[in-house]
View 1: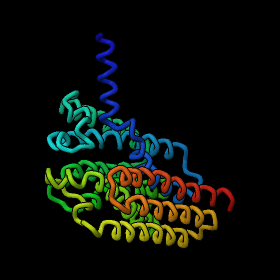
View 2: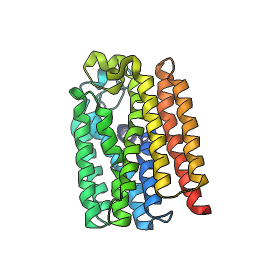
View 3: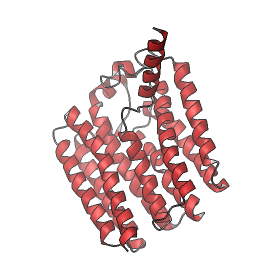
Length: 290
């Protein structure tokens, strides 16, 4: 009986940090991989690649624990989140914070394997992540702040590989911010009604009936900025094919969110894992064959 209780508790810990929902890992991880490959001309250092890959997993998991702690009094009133372990009372707020602290320390220990400048940038990223969950009470564009936090791996990657952030790094950073606006607004469309009732701010509420139009503008901005990155680095056909494939996925997402149905909007959000993947495949193949 005690063994069963321990197993159930571990399952709840896993659900707290969303191990059963890997989309968040992918959308956080792909910009880091784009940046590493572009900064290192297709050959990132093995240690740097390992630190970033494991850091993405730890950082996303820590962020989920912190987010649930911040929303512990709100999640029980939202359809999609009312059964989360903390909202349902299966784990305590103290446990959630302990997990957040442990995972954050592990991520920081990892990044300490790299140079001091990268560590300094990691501290900035940690602060951006720490602030985000508490913005949703008063800031109408929390998705923009999430873009800063989720895409901060881009300047970090350039610093880790080149010890400087060239202009192309900031262009890629901007592309990542717009991409976050795309997928997190789609995600927020799932909870729009509940968020309105409990007083949570989101771009889905702010944009209203213009949501699809503004998502489309952000999607075009992502594609355009990625094209600028390719031109600045003189990348070839494989790179452009990756962006073209991404544009096709964005068009598919627009079709999914056409009627603003919860399940379809959630599918659109999840589809962004494939967007990140095809862009990365284009980058990797371009360096492999040119």
